[in-house]
Amino acid sequence: MIRVLFICHGNICRSPMAEFIFRDLVEKKGLSHKIETASCATSREEIGNPVYPPARRILLEHGIFCEGKTARQLVKEDYAYYDYLVAMENYNLRNMKKIIASDPQHKISRLLDFTSHPGDIDDPWYSGDFQTAYDEIFRGCQGLLAQIQSKLS
Image (tube, rainbow, N blue to C red; front, top):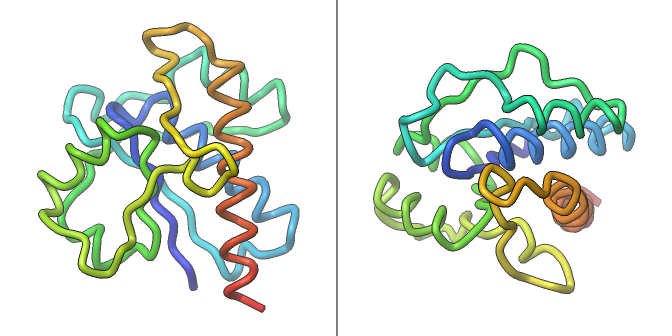
């Protein structure tokens, strides 16, 4: 089983969008029995809160459901459990390293590092641009899944 953890600041916008977009792609490829997906936050401020309504809406527009998801914070033990710890931006990477300390197995990356245009995914909580966030997350998830599938072959 390959385990993927998506991480952003609050775990109510980008990382749950990534979790459920990726899970949808994995299911459509028939790989749910081989890939586990989750998401979390680097901060504590949203713990227990559901996915932010505009993020839920854009997922629903694409037929993706995220009911029951609540925010949780990254813990040090996540590093041992997950094979991929995928951040949305450099700010998340810095905060992840404060929690995890180091990355000796090179499990940590940004989601857009799996595309031909590496970079940060802007936080739609601040920008209000959930469509761009969705599009970038979707592209990153496709790239990540392609890499994982090549390892499964």
